[in-house]
Length: 194
Image (cartoon, rainbow, N blue to C red; front, side):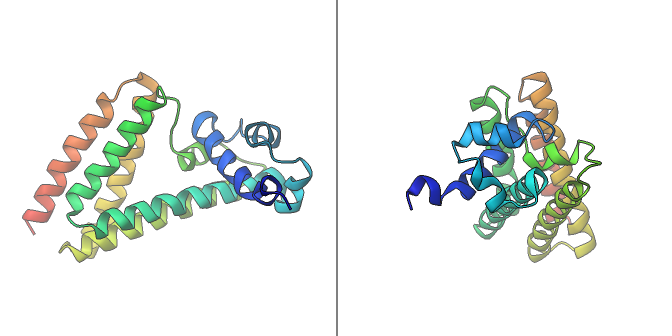
């Protein structure tokens, strides 16, 4: 089997994630994924018998897992303040390098009404919950009480995702920079006032 055929599943998942980031869930069709990835049409229902909904759901899960690994790596590397700063810096880089075209694929799915595939919203919610749980666990290990850690983790995710959306809309990193500065100040007080 040629490498091109053997990696078609992985390519389709990557392509779906890219399309979600750039165009949203509604515009992420099987045809667009195939055009983006060059995967053979016959492989779609072989790898994703549930069709578009399964492909998008798995792309959301995969994207969420990728960010979860980044969260864990950043938090394990040391200071939670620097780790959170690194997430804002990552998004600043992604936004500017893409000309403000990319956003979070999880938000892309969560923000759209998916009446024909309600499992997509559930998948997005599960990803956000896993991110929150991971951040909260790291904050707790650095001395914050678990209830406060859980609330702050939710706030970090909400602030970052909201700032990315605002930055994309305004084509400026100003909202992201403002959120990063306020988040650093908030977390500095939280960790030093415990």
